[in-house]
Structure formats: structure tokens, C-alpha cells
Image (tube, rainbow, N blue to C red; front, top):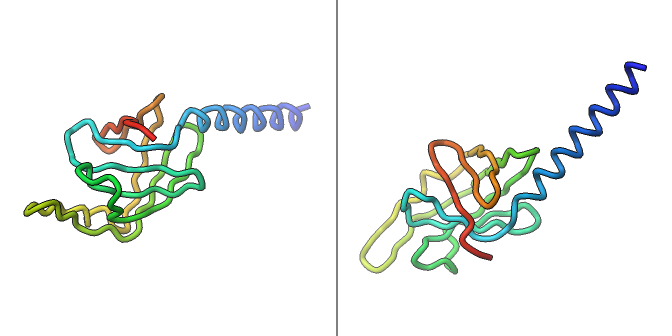
Length: 119
């Protein structure tokens, strides 16, 4: 009897995790604090880093995973952005892992909030 209850609980947790994961939509996300960067999430668990002034320029890549309502992003090498005469240093992302909580079309964590701005 206890084994059946444990199995049912595990199935329920997996189902709830699947439902939360379905709430996260791929596309472009921007931080609400005005930092001029865009994260573009693709199907297949890849994420690209771009400057907001030129969203087609890829400064770096990484991978993301979703477990329930938890979004984990692992960045590879990320380079600086040169827009006109202005340099923006995004190298601090290189090799780092960030964990966020998914909430509708946004994710929150590390003192940041990111909102979905498009495909």
C-alpha cells in the first residue's frame, strides 16, 4: 500500500513539473533593470546572449534546463559588446550558472527579473 502511495506521489510530482515547464515559452527576454542585454531561448535547451541594440549579434551561448518552475542557465564563453564607440562587458557571464523561478512570461532570481519581449 505504501509503495502505491509513493508511486502515485512521484507521478504527481512529475506531472506538476511538466505543467510548470510548459509555462516557460521560448523567445527573447530582457531584464527589467534596464541592462542592455537580451537572452534568446530556443527549443532544444540552448540560449544566446545578445546586446539589446543589435539582437542579431550573438555574444555567447549557453544551455538551459527546466525542473518544475526552476530555470537553470549555464553560460559558456561570452564576449564584450561593441556598439558604436561604447563597450559593454558581458564576460562576467562566462562559465557561470544562474538559477531562476519561472513566473508566467518572466523569470526571477539573483535580484533580477526578466520579461519576455518577443520571439
